[in-house]
Image 1: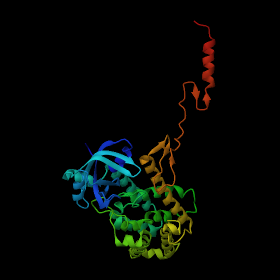
Image 2 (image 1 turned 60 degrees about the horizontal axis):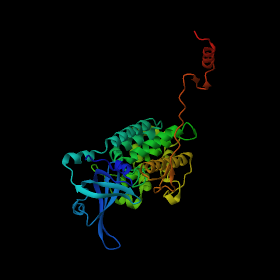
Image 3 (image 1 turned 30 degrees about the vertical axis):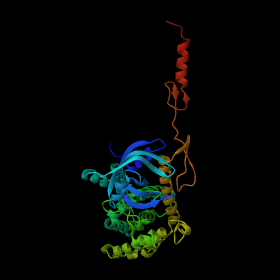
Image 4 (image 1 turned 90 degrees about the horizontal axis):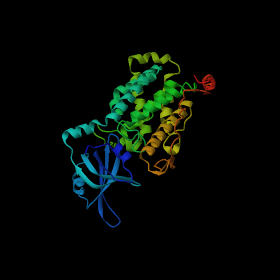
Amino acid sequence: MSPISIAALKEQAGEKPIAAAVLAQLQHRQLRTTKTNKPYLELGLADATGSFSIKIWSDSPAYAAAESLPDGGVTRLQGRWTAGQYGLEAKELELSLPDDAARDAFFAGDPGIREKQGRDYALIEQLCDSIGDPRLHALCAHFLTSHGERFRRTAAAKRNHHARRGGLVEHVAQMMRAAAALCPVYPELNRDLLLTAVLFHDCGKLWENSYPERGFNQLHSLHGEMLGHIPLGIELVNKLWREVQESAAAGAWETLMPPTEEARLHLLHLIGSHHGEYQFGSPVLPRTPEAFALHHLDNLDAKLEMVRDAYALGRELAPGIYDRMFPLQNNLVRPLAGYSPPEKTENQTADGPDPAAAGKAEAAESRPPD
């Protein structure tokens, strides 16, 4: 049985068991007990497409293999899978170690996601290169050169949306697409500043949600735990700004308008205010058009990613009604399909029946037979 990805398993598993195998890397393992003191292991597992947790009971044949699996080890899980209120469950579960070739293919990641993230990263480079302000252009280029590899293996979140290796690239690319489309509609928006802020708004997550060079376990760091991504992002931008000001080209910036210090301050404000409210972690509230736009672009992309996941993974309670998935607040309803115009018949124009064709048909009917 060829293994499938975790994302595919989540999509295919439902109330009826399916036979499937997955390759996954151990993220964490905890020994727990039930209310009746029955021991079990809870494993956190991940691949390039997502993660899940599973309980393995002490009387399961797979318990010994789960107990001996090394931290960060890759295992093959095969069984009959169902998905319920508490996530994935497996019966007749078997754990085994993959061979070297299978392990190398696993660490290379899902081909579809890898290809999509490559396109997204190329778009980020393209839009950064379109920034006209030489200071912001230099800052973006310096970030991509010095931190691009770490950026490419960072998640946008620990859970809920784009919570996978490279998810931050997907999130930033989609927000940049939206920002580039939005700026012509609202000419009061500073396009250069908004695109730069999209690139940097979550840059502190490179120390909060990053992954190792080889693996799918999110790393934990003291900086990420004790400061969080907004203060870290502000600190990183200040550091990069100082470095680009030491370049040869920076000598010409003294006469640029708006002043360089104002450009830096506005960018820092956007990073600091992008969560939109104090209760969601922003140290300051949005105070400029770009700050409001950034906050809503960020929230929109995160929410629509959650909605996509909910449609793909949620249980259908009734025709067209899907069970609520955290952190969304309600059940979802199947979206309205796009309009499809009716196919034109031989005697019909786009605006209705063709009078000329109808007249020809009537004339033919009124002719006497030959």
